[in-house]
Image (tube, rainbow, N blue to C red):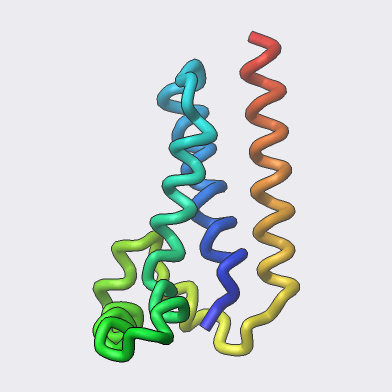
Length: 110
């Protein structure tokens, strides 16, 4: 299972790049990126459902199935990092930061 930072980094980076190419002037880019990042970590919602065992079990079933890949390839990312490596999480946050700053600079210069 991978740390949530990897999921957010992947979703955020791809979303920023897609918006940069398709809609660089879109006013609410940050909102779309935040919503995309939230979508990527939704399968991990079972962690906050500790007080509701039935819901937690059902949500864990979604997390552990191929259906979780609809959430920015959540299952694929989890299986690629079984050790929860914090370096991968930090690397994805770093990549997201570089992509956001780079695209914003290009957009503002236009």
